[in-house]
Image 1: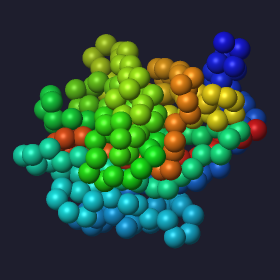
Image 2 (image 1 turned 90 degrees about the vertical axis):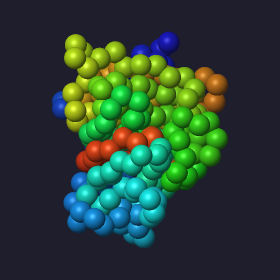
Image 3 (image 1 turned 45 degrees about the vertical axis):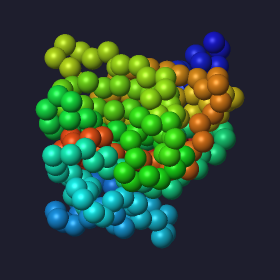
Image 4 (image 1 turned 180 degrees about the vertical axis):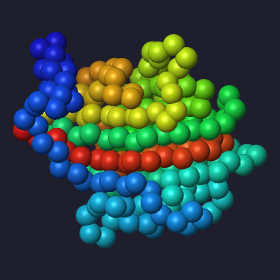
Length: 228
């Protein structure tokens, strides 16, 4: 309990402008590419030398301006950047998501994964094995997942009328204690804290994606490390 409370306090200090924590950006992307060009193979606005987005280049795909269209059949579409967390760090992963579509069309998602499968589903526990992650649907629903895949899912209790579009999603991963901990935020509000008592997740990538047929856009992708 003391370690969990410490995590919450650390996160609160990070979010408070009066803290002594600094931010070092690992990746950032405002998706300012030309409409009609693919995101796959594009260099993020900020990234280590040689790193490019890995995504689909066929079918309905993520585009350089952060948009994705819809189609009649389900097409999961994910984008990846390589990332392996180090022990003793606090990482912040964030993305603004604007999903559009009818009920049942799916959702947009953000998280950490062990594999890069551009057409896999976030909810599967193999392949990408996403853990931790969260989704936002066009109807204002937000759900958090400890993972991998569909495991450990909890709905984010929303304000009256649901979460507004765009959803500002944020995941803070703390590797500073054993086991690791994670905290999820929606539009700046903490909605859940979790400790990985059954084992820390295997992480090789950060990823966002589309499940089923949802269309819309994403913006302001960022991965950073927070330090004192």
